Structures are given as structure tokens and as C-alpha cells.
Length: 357
Image (cartoon, rainbow, N blue to C red; front, side, top):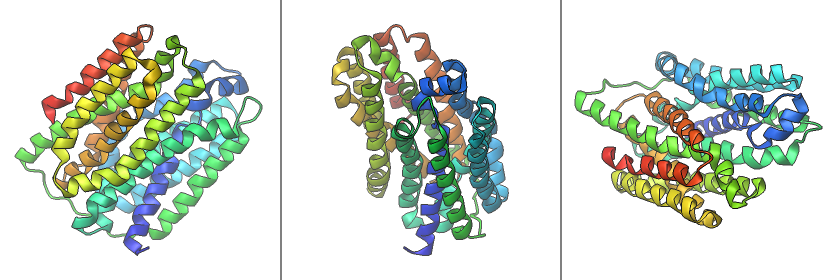
């Protein structure tokens, strides 16, 4: 593998590790609550602290990456490792401290996806680099969903915590060895481009909002239809795996053939149809979640590539996406006892992307 692609691959591993640690406790909430002797709501904060801190830290992290790219990115990688090591203390307090550390590192890592591609690759290959980095992010999410139930239970979380920490350590070492000190330069954003970037941020707000709401509440919304937790977890895993494949394979082809806007419009329609399918025919959920994963996660590398092309910070897209995740998830939470209405709201949010795309 050429050295420039080793950098992108190492970054993708670090991004995957950060996401893996973020979602460590999400698929084993009940077992974690029993293990630590706390409520399930308390366990929820081990995951929910991430979008909250991201909203606060996205812009400062973006500035840090602009001023000192390599030190800032490596700080994110090694703070992730530190968070993983702190969690080995195996108490709720240390788990929360460890998660806060990983959450602080997250914007330093995720905001760097376009800058890594820009600094490591020639312009014609940057779309592929952004796609690979984004696929790494989603791969960490996909890995976390089955890994938790496979390695942890109420009796012991330690095998899972050790695997997470070792993975983060290996990824941080790989990035430290491969990442060159050269930094990418950024051109000023012209006013016309700035307006386009804000439209891209609006698309991220709406699309990522639907994705976060689905990942947070899908199980609860499908439960009244008699769909088990295990089945709902499998559906979520299928959605994320489809998104990983879409991010890695589909988005570079769309960028190459200048079909980005067509895809974003189609994504809005497909996502709305998927949410309506979940509302009207929950037992056909598998037919809905795979297209949802393809379009919702496949749109992110396209948004990031369009943003990088205009020399705008990726932090804006991530900030908008995480803010949308909080807002839409809260709205859906208020409708969690009315699944049809909740899925209907998500369909309407998805369709509103057409206004901006």
C-alpha cells in the first residue's frame, strides 16, 4: 500500500476505534446497568454525552486542526486510548470519565476526515480518501453493535473493555507512525460558496437527525409490533453495514460522475419511503432499513467532499449533523408511544432535505 493510503487507512482505524468506544455500552444497556448497579438512564448518559460535547467542541476542534493539524489529530487518537484505559477501572464513575475523554477526542478525529484526504492524497483521489475515512467511522459503529453482546454480560464487561482499549491503542500507534507533519492549506471561502456550504449543513442537520433518531429509538418504536430487542439490534446492524458499503463504494462513483445532487435528492425520497414503510408495515422493516442505511450514511462522505471542495471546515457538517441528531431524537422521543407518528415525523424531516439539496 502506498504511504499516502496508509495514512488514510490509519486514520480510518482511529475513527473506527473512537466510534467503537462511543457505543460500547449502547447495545448492552440492561447488562451494564445491572453490572454497575445503576439505572438504565444513567447508562444512557455514557452514550448521550457524545453529541452534547460535540456541539460544544466542534468549532474549537476545527480551529485546532487548522492551526496544528498533526498534533491535534494525534491528541484525539491518544485521548481516545486514555479514555479506553480509564474505563478498565470497571466502575460507573470511571466509565463515565472514560467516555467523557473519548467524547472530547471525537471532534478532533471526525473533523479531520477531509483534511487527512487533502493532505495525503492528490486532488483526483480525495473523494476516495474521504469515502474510506467515512467508511471507517461507520465501521466502528457496525462493529460495536454485535461486539458488546458477544463479549460482555452483567457478570463481566472486562473482555469487551480490553478489546476496545487494545484496538484504540493499535490504531493510535499506526497513525502516529504514518501521519506526516505536513499540513494542508485552506483557501478562504467565497460568499457564493459559503451559501452552498450552509445548504450542505442544513442537509446534514436533517439527514443525520433522522439517522440518529432511528438508531436511538428504532427498538422502542418497533416493540409494540412484537419485534424483539434482538431482532431490532439486527436491523440496526444491517442498516449500518449497508451504510458502510455505501460510503466506501457508492459515494466515490457518484462524485466522479458529478451525481452528488441527484443522489441527495433521491436519498431524501428513499429515506421518507423507508420511514413510512416502518410506520405502516413494521414486520417488513428489513426492506426499509437497508435502503435507509445506504442513503443516510452514504450521503455523509458526499457532503464532506462537497464541503472540502469549497475549502470549508468539515466541523460545520459534523456540528450540524450532531445538532440535528439531538433535535430530531428529542422530537421522536416525545412521540415514542405513538410509533406511526414518530416515523411520520422522520419521513417529513427526510423529505425537507429536498428544499436544500
